[in-house]
Image (cartoon, rainbow, N blue to C red; front, top):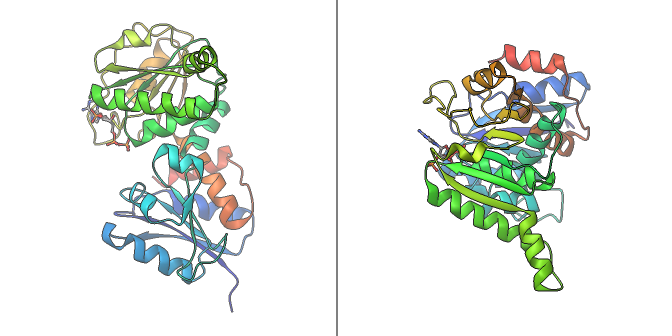
Length: 301
Ligand code: ATR
């Protein structure tokens, strides 16, 4: 009987994903007896497929569009990150108490990936300066979670639909309060001020003033998507600028930021680093993100 550990990426469609190339590179590099394949799974088949793979002895899977939110209602339990981000991108199978249907533990490693990419790019949190985040979708939730973990006190959330930004701002402020049971109202107020998220509408780019970091967490600027039309005039020249979009690697936003002297961090590292905790849970090794790996992944696009 083969002892190869089996993992997979589930998506619909899934053929353009870089994850099999990424995990395949590490499996080879570390000489691990394992496999990582892409499986096209229709949304309606997700629950059944997950149980089937768990029963077949898979060590786990990653999830991509459109499964990440749906999986919340399927897994047997999940970690704090999956709960607060509201999405599951990694499922560990059969790790805990076995249930007869195959055990599923949901996790989310996107915030970890985003934070690691920022740190690797030389960014240091300046808690006294605001951070501007563009977008209020699933990606923005992971970005805000990561920034708050890193100590961000004030986030300016700019989104086309103001109501979505407002809802997210409120949710993440409430969550930070929930982490802390304040002994009195004065202290509770201090905590609320420590982690403020303010909502702004699209066009309200005064929110970039004084920012130490600007993050694009929308899909704008991606190949095939509309351009990201954000004036940078008010952004301080010493601010970092990062983009979750990595195709193209140098987005128009990053190009414009670089031209005016801002330091930039591209989005590829987020993809590479978010895969690390999953690979470690599946195959037992925390893998390295190297220049050679980056080149290998860029070749595969
Ligand atoms: P994801 O899960 O990848 O974040 P999403 O939930 O669809 O994807 O969110 C996409 C984000 O890009 C949203 O913030 C969206 O703004 P709305 O909340 O107003 O929909 C933003 N976005 C998409 N197209 C946009 C456009 N043409 N102009 C400005 N923002 C846009």
